[in-house]
Image 1 (cartoon, one colour):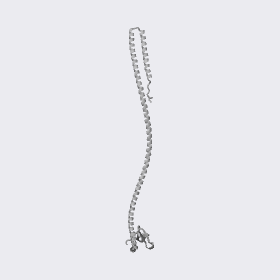
Image 2 (cartoon, one colour):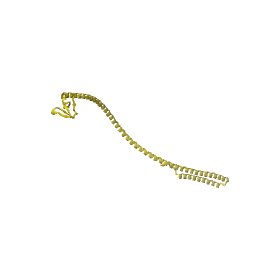
Image 3 (cartoon, helix red, strand yellow):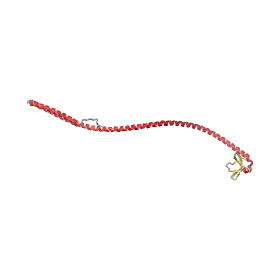
Image 4 (tube, helix red, strand yellow):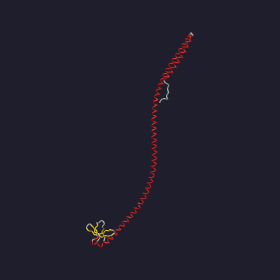
Length: 239
């Protein structure tokens, strides 16, 4: 960093100023020598006085220029030193900025990598969502069909329950009719033996058997074919 700042070394500029001052001094000495030579050839007093005046003027000018040049040299050297200091500070700041730029570039590269990875994940998620969306549509269609079938089943169930109620009513009527027919048949077969104690009957294999009670059991039938039964299936005659 800092290679872009090209300053001429302090010693080189100082040497240039000293060379300039020496050149001026030699020039002034040559003028004074020529003046003295002219005075030595011409002995007139006015010429001597004029030479002294010129010498004073030239010497004062030379001394002023020399002091002015030294002052300018000091000023330039101070400004040059300040420039070196500022150059070093700027070079350090440039180095820091370059480091910061490199760090930011690394962060940008990392973010770019993460962005690409997230973009791929987003693409996969979108594909999955589209696939799941199709599955959801199919499921909705299946559910709709199931509800339609359920409505039909409920309708059929209602009709079947109605028919079942009708059949139960019919069954109850038939059962009552059957019991009535069995009771009438039992009365017809067994009431003649009512006074002999046959006051009960049992239906067995579509046949009526007249029964009488003996203790906790019931004896049904006549003669050797008579058998004993519990009271579970025994019914009372209504003679």
